[in-house]
Image (cartoon, rainbow, N blue to C red; front, side, top):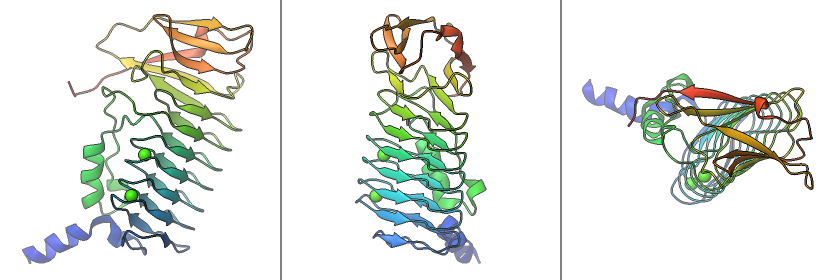
Amino acid sequence: MIAVLLALMGLGILSMFAGDDDGGGDEGTEGADGYLGTEEANTFSGNGGSDLLAGFGGDDVLSGGDGGDWIFALDGNDSVSGDSGNDVIVGGEGADTLAGGTGNDFVEAANVIDEPALLESLKSARALTDIVFQYDLSQPSDAGDLVDLGEGNDTVVMGSDDTITGGSGADKFSGGDWIEPGNAAIISDYDADEDVITFAYDANDPTPVLDVFLNKQTGHAHVRSGNQDVVVVENAGSDFTISMIKLTPYSHNKG
Ligand SMILES: [Ca+2]
Ligand SMILES: [Ca+2]
């Protein structure tokens, strides 16, 4: 009896899905598929249904296809397309190219999720709702990513050297103190009428003092901390002020 239970737990989340995890290139079905990659480069296409794609190491190419997909690219310089549906995309370490596609997508480009907890939960989860998705905001963010949120009301957690295009819809650009000053996140198409920019900071630290330098030549707004850029808002317009950056404290349990 005990052996049977352990075997079921080992199967974990993949038993929920029709796909396999043989590590090669794979095409999903119109239903829910699950693919767990290897440390090599993997190519997975989820096609229809709510798919789970995890690339792990290597430069992976992951396409969610239709449906609300969960895509964890993790290590390596990965290329991810959420395609249609409300997708959750996590780039992980490396210089990733992340496209949300249509739908209201969530893209984590800063690499500030708690990856050990995520990996542990991926091994044992029996459903998407079992996946542990929490932040470890005290860690520095990773290499610059190229993010295109596409149509829809999207949210991005942006980190150092990331370049973000929000596309149409009301988008939320979430930066924070994980961005290294001088290695700003760049927003290419901020629209003050519908988009929101937030900057999160450790509640245990003093409230950050940010200011804005408007470059009249380029039209870009440089949001700065200690005279170093943390967010650059391209073509922000002369109306851009620091009041458009919403400061939000966060608390965390980790040291
Ligand atoms: Ca891989
Ligand atoms: Ca990656």
